[in-house]
Length: 88
Image: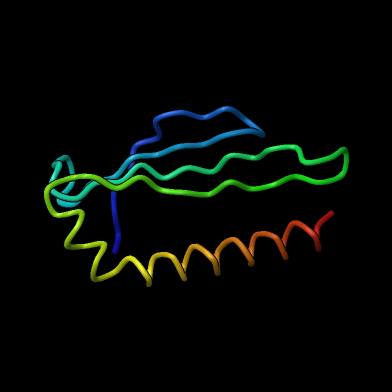
Protein backbone atom coordinates (compact mmCIF):
# COMPACT_ATOMS: atom_id res chain seq x y z
CA UNK A 1 0.00 0.00 0.00
CA UNK A 2 1.57 3.31 -1.00
CA UNK A 3 1.88 5.40 2.12
CA UNK A 4 3.16 8.94 2.48
CA UNK A 5 5.73 9.10 5.28
CA UNK A 6 7.54 11.73 7.29
CA UNK A 7 11.03 11.17 8.69
CA UNK A 8 11.01 11.68 12.45
CA UNK A 9 14.68 11.12 13.25
CA UNK A 10 17.84 10.36 11.30
CA UNK A 11 21.30 9.70 12.72
CA UNK A 12 23.55 8.93 9.73
CA UNK A 13 25.10 5.44 9.84
CA UNK A 14 23.15 4.62 13.03
CA UNK A 15 19.39 5.16 13.11
CA UNK A 16 16.40 6.15 10.95
CA UNK A 17 12.73 6.40 11.97
CA UNK A 18 9.72 7.49 9.94
CA UNK A 19 6.00 7.86 10.52
CA UNK A 20 3.05 7.18 8.24
CA UNK A 21 -0.72 6.94 8.60
CA UNK A 22 -3.78 5.78 6.65
CA UNK A 23 -5.56 7.83 5.62
CA UNK A 24 -2.68 10.29 5.46
CA UNK A 25 -2.58 12.64 8.42
CA UNK A 26 -5.07 10.64 10.50
CA UNK A 27 -4.70 8.48 13.58
CA UNK A 28 -6.97 5.71 12.30
CA UNK A 29 -4.04 3.43 11.47
CA UNK A 30 -0.51 4.71 11.93
CA UNK A 31 2.96 3.35 12.35
CA UNK A 32 6.41 4.48 13.28
CA UNK A 33 8.99 2.35 11.46
CA UNK A 34 12.68 2.23 12.33
CA UNK A 35 16.09 0.83 11.50
CA UNK A 36 18.94 0.95 14.00
CA UNK A 37 22.47 -0.30 13.31
CA UNK A 38 24.35 -1.63 16.34
CA UNK A 39 28.01 -2.66 16.38
CA UNK A 40 28.22 -6.29 17.52
CA UNK A 41 31.99 -6.56 17.10
CA UNK A 42 34.69 -4.71 15.19
CA UNK A 43 33.60 -6.54 12.01
CA UNK A 44 29.89 -7.19 12.62
CA UNK A 45 26.83 -4.94 12.62
CA UNK A 46 23.35 -5.95 13.78
CA UNK A 47 20.24 -4.45 12.19
CA UNK A 48 17.37 -3.78 14.58
CA UNK A 49 14.25 -3.35 12.44
CA UNK A 50 10.81 -2.71 13.82
CA UNK A 51 7.55 -0.83 13.70
CA UNK A 52 5.21 0.46 16.38
CA UNK A 53 1.56 0.55 15.29
CA UNK A 54 -1.22 2.58 16.85
CA UNK A 55 -4.58 4.11 16.07
CA UNK A 56 -8.23 3.08 16.37
CA UNK A 57 -8.00 0.50 13.59
CA UNK A 58 -4.54 -0.87 14.38
CA UNK A 59 -5.76 -4.04 16.14
CA UNK A 60 -8.11 -4.94 13.30
CA UNK A 61 -5.51 -4.26 10.60
CA UNK A 62 -2.75 -6.15 12.39
CA UNK A 63 -4.94 -9.14 13.15
CA UNK A 64 -5.61 -9.45 9.43
CA UNK A 65 -2.27 -8.41 7.91
CA UNK A 66 0.26 -8.73 10.75
CA UNK A 67 1.71 -12.05 9.56
CA UNK A 68 2.11 -10.73 6.00
CA UNK A 69 3.94 -7.66 7.34
CA UNK A 70 6.17 -9.84 9.51
CA UNK A 71 7.07 -12.05 6.53
CA UNK A 72 7.77 -9.10 4.24
CA UNK A 73 10.03 -7.47 6.87
CA UNK A 74 11.92 -10.77 7.18
CA UNK A 75 12.38 -10.93 3.41
CA UNK A 76 13.59 -7.33 3.36
CA UNK A 77 16.07 -8.01 6.18
CA UNK A 78 17.47 -11.08 4.42
CA UNK A 79 17.83 -9.21 1.11
CA UNK A 80 19.59 -6.32 2.88
CA UNK A 81 21.95 -8.73 4.66
CA UNK A 82 22.78 -10.46 1.39
CA UNK A 83 23.39 -7.15 -0.37
CA UNK A 84 25.66 -5.87 2.39
CA UNK A 85 27.68 -9.07 2.51
CA UNK A 86 28.11 -9.09 -1.27
CA UNK A 87 29.12 -5.42 -1.31
CA UNK A 88 31.60 -5.52 1.54
